[in-house]
Length: 109
Image (cartoon, rainbow, N blue to C red; front, top):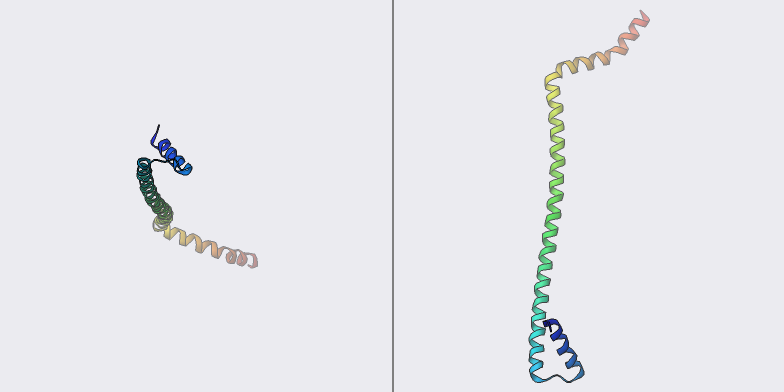
């Protein structure tokens, strides 16, 4: 008979009122051990929940950091292009901004 089955047997004998004094002591020890095991399990569950919360928070922070890194890399790439071709981009924008005016002048001329 397993410890669990033995304990259930003692509980059943106590409910029926046929438990012996030595069995009462064994039942008390079993109940005390179960209470301790329950307290231990509750403590472990609390630790696991806290660990899970910290893990979720860390994962969220990691995702935010990865997104910020991707934005910074994209910005760095744009800045590199602007540094390399900044003058040409400025001239092209100016030319594009002037084009409607220039075309209008040619049409009037």
